[in-house]
Length: 111
Image (cartoon, rainbow, N blue to C red):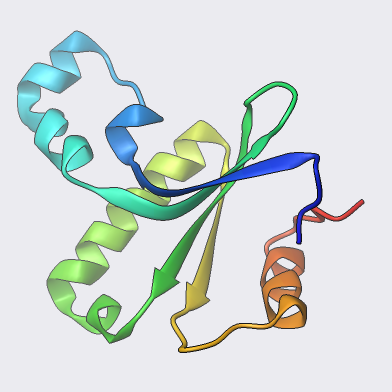
């Protein structure tokens, strides 16, 4: 769907793509980052630069503790200046629906 320009990685640990200072790491941010994942990461095939992350949001994202986690993750990606695309979880997906979510998030991966 994204052609040869991009690579898609699944179940990516936040600690593998987000860094913080040693001081922040020791203050407890390590656990908040190291134990969390995003569903997919889209990166440029030539440079490996991350251009977007995708979260598939199921019903669990409506729980208060999950909302706090989502706000934390949203904040991390905003600081990284990387788009975080949230897509409602479904049993099946089509390219048009996925394309619409990326377009609404301001991304056009198919140029």
